[in-house]
Length: 524
Image 1: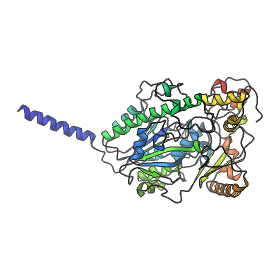
Image 2: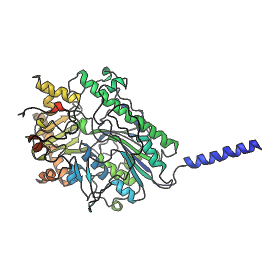
Image 3: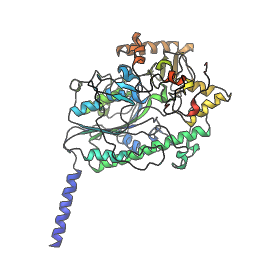
Image 4: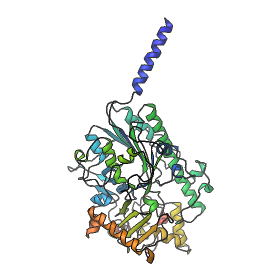
């Protein structure tokens, strides 16, 4: 009798366990966006030997690794605005800028999914920085329910205490088994600040691990150490991702979840974040969807933009553009690539990509920006700077506010102050020519401007004409003589920074160091 009871108990336990782990009864996929803050193409799946990212690598190995994924605008606010709306930043009015008021007329994919039966939420950093209100003045939740309940001890003083994994589990565990969900895991890493030498002391890394320091920075110990601190935070992110994947597998929802793992733009270093060069806009992207991607370990070379994410997620959820009631979306769904089962160039029409910026951080007179537009095509990057009299990284006297404070930034600034050659300062902080052209096959660091070489005159002319025609078709105000309107949208905070700073007001400067401020006005 005792044995019968034991068998019955084991059977009952198995039934309960099966019921708990049973996949959700829904034909719609779950959607998981994993977005790092300020991480470049520095994943081991891309061949980086000084960064180890088994979570990212697993998603790529069991799905697709995108080799040419880009943000249209390499700054947090406008980049994330493009992800959630499917529109380029120059199509988003005030949201073309950083620290903006998000326009009420633009709808987001999380809002659309929620209207169509999905439970929607996020943890950590979602859209922003900026503010969003409804037409009646109430606070607008662009990304659904915030789940920041669980915290944990962080390994350094600057890494967030947010327990991203536990908050994800909290959300999924409290979602009905019959309801699909959409969740955004928004890491604040590897955004600065970093604990100095954490990569070496905690991550066990060595400066010699780094194969190459980008040619626009001096190859010195402090720069290499800075890169290792950045790498350590990427690995911290990836450790959480591995745990999230393990949990999805445990509850039987891994294959029914469309997972996109990426970063909002490149690393928070000079000439990268806040610029429109190759390493600024080129982002890591791996996608896994067991039930929706044909094949595994695919390497796709099509140009893919963040504007393609929203239409991809809506189509995967079975929501048409008409049903979504979103503003016309310029992005194209990636589902044809998912279904192709092919590597290489899948869609021959994906042969170009547009980038650009308006106002990033404040710090120039009148809170104006540094307008740029650019196009990638045929291995070239064409850039046009529309206001070359302005400082591209914000004014020197206000601390070059469009570049986060760092050992790398300080070293380069001090080189100029100490009377050393201005080569690195000019590349990272100096004023620029109106037209720039780079051969990315031979110069991925974008340090050799070919625009003035006669043999590239036809390339410059053709790329400029094609770029501006495409932008005009997208109603870019900069193309029709009304670019100043982008600069008239109010800043969400720190308005008239330059004027107040020059008047002696004590300002909140954000992520810059005290040593970043020049003590005299620079001429060039």
